[in-house]
Amino acid sequence: MPEKSLTTNVGHTRTLEYVVADYRQKLLSRPELLNTRSAYSALRRAKGKSDVNPVELSEIDNESLRDGLTHILGRISLWKNEGGGLLSETTVSFEEWCSVMTQLQAKANPGLTNEQLDGLVDAGFLRRTYDVVGGSL
Image (cartoon, rainbow, N blue to C red):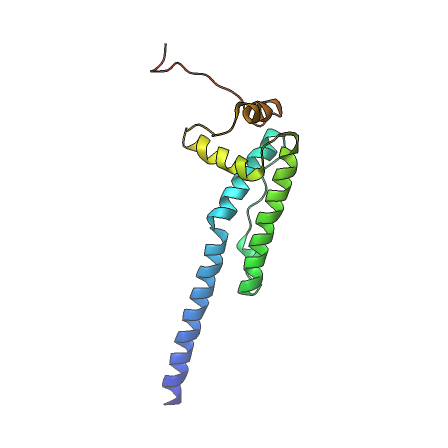
C-alpha cells in the first residue's frame, strides 16, 4: 500500500513540474513581452545599436512563479521606459510606436498625424517610401 501511495505522489509531483515548466514557457512567450522587445529593438537598430537580448528561461527558472512574472513585467517596463526615452525627440509615445510597428507589419497606414510621422522620419526611426497606386510603372 505505501508503494502505491508513493507512486501516486511521484506522478503528482511530475505533473506539477510539467505545469510549472509550461507556465514559465508561457511567460517567455507573452505577446506583450515579444511585441515590446520587437518594438524596442527596432528603435535601437535605428540608432545603430544592437537588439536587446530576449529573456531566457535560465533567468526565471530558479525563481518562484510570482518572481518569474515580476521579472518579465519588470523587463517589459524597462524596455518601454527606455524606448520612450529614445522617442523623446518626437511626439510619439512608446505605446503609439508599438501600434505603428503592428500597422507597418500589416502593411497598413500607421495611424499617426503627418507631424508625428515627420518627427519619426526626422529622428531616423522611419523612412518614407512611395509607390504608384494601382501597381507598378
